[in-house]
Image 1 (cartoon, rainbow, N blue to C red):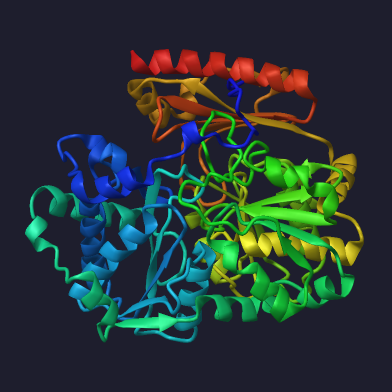
Image 2 (cartoon, one colour):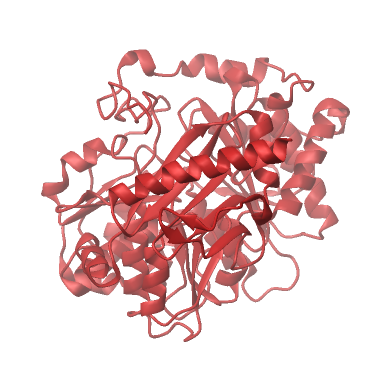
Length: 551
C-alpha cells in the first residue's frame, strides 16, 4: 500500500502552491534540451504532458507539435476546421496562444470559443462530430490543451482526428516524430504569426461550444426525468473547465444544481491535498474530493469532475465517493435496461484492468463484453458505429450512446456520467451505490486494488516483452489459471503488460510510462485475504518471470 501523506485530504497549505509566475516565465524562457529524452515530445495515452519548470512543456514543444499536426492533417487530407479547447491549468492559456499562432500561420481554419472561455474535452469531441455529421469531405478535427487531473504545474496537449476521439497510436507516433524533428533539427520549419494577428485572422472563427453542447444534452440523458424528480444536486468542478456549464444546464433544463465552488485559480489553492501531498484534481480520489464528500448530506446526490471534465466522481449520502468501478457497473446495469432505442446487439466496453463485476453485469444484461487495453481510443470505433453502447475505464472515464442509439461523443464525458447518476436516481428512487449493492448481492462482491511496485527501466522493458510461455504456474491463489493474456481479448491489441485470470480473481501488471514502477491491479471475489494472496503470488510470479527473461 502507498504511504499516505499527513496532509492528505486537508486544505492545501501555501507551501505546496505552485509559483505561477515562474511557471509561465519558464514556458517562454526555458529551452528544452533535445539530447535529454525526457525533454523531447512524447505522446502517452493522453497526449503530450509535462511542466515548463522541468523543460518538458514549453513554448518550443507546443509550436513544434502544432506544426506537426498541421503537416499530419495535410497528409491525411483533413481540410475542415480545427476545433480548439483549453482547460484551467496555468499553462493552458500560454499554450493556446502558441497553438493559434501556428495554426493561423499555416492557414488552418480554426474554431475557438466565442467568449474565450474554458472548454471541456468532451465538448470539443461533440463539436467535431456535430460538424462532421453526414459529411464525407471537409471533415473537422481538434486539439485540447489539458493535462487532465494532473497537478497545477503541468500542461498537456492532445490531438483528436475527425472521429472526435483520442488519436490512434500511428497518428501520435507520426506527430511525435515530426515534432521532435522540428524541435531538434528544423525550428525554422515552424510557421507562425503574432498572436494578436492570429486572433483577428479570417481563418479564426468563434463558436458557441457551451450552448451547442448544453442544448443537446437531452438527446443523451433524460433531462425531463431529472427535472421532474426535483432532486437536490451538488456539483464541484474542482476549478476545472466545467465551472461555467452547470448554471446554463440548470437554466436550460430546469434541474436543481448547486455549484459548491465556482473558483478558478491556476494554483488550485482551494483543493484538498491528494494522497501523496500534491494538489491533483482527481475526482476519483477521496482525498482530492474531501470537500464535496464533507457536504454529501446537503444533497440527494453530488459529483465532481477533473480539470477538463472527462472524468467523474459520484458522491452519495450512503457511500460517500463511489469507487469508479462500482459506478461503472451500476451505470452499465441501468443503461442496458433503460435505453430502448439502443441496438439490441450493442456491447459493453471495458478496459482489461476494470472490475470483473462488469463482466457479470454484461452477462446478466445478455450483452457481449469487449475488453480492450487501457486507453479510451480503443472504444472510439465502437461508439461511432454503435457496436458499443458504453465504453468505460477504471480510472473514472466513460461515455455512452445517445438515447436513439447513435454516437454522442468519442471521448470520456464526465458531465453526462454525472447526469446519468442523477437520471438513475430520479427514475429508480435509489442512488447508484444502492444499485451497486443490489448487483453484488446477486452477482458476488469483489475486492479490487491497484498498487505500485518498484521497477527499473530494464525491468519495465522486460515486462512489456513477457509472453504467456514465460509463466509456468497453473494456479493462482488456489484456483486454476484460466488465461494468461498479453493481448486484449476484445480486439487483440497488446495490453502493454499481462493479465492472469481465474474464475474467482485476477491480476494485471503494466509498467508506468513516467515513473520507475509497475502498476499491479488485482481483484478477488473471495474477500480481502484472498486478494492479498493474489497480490503476493503475482509479485512472486512476476519476479521469477522477469529474472528468467532477463537471462
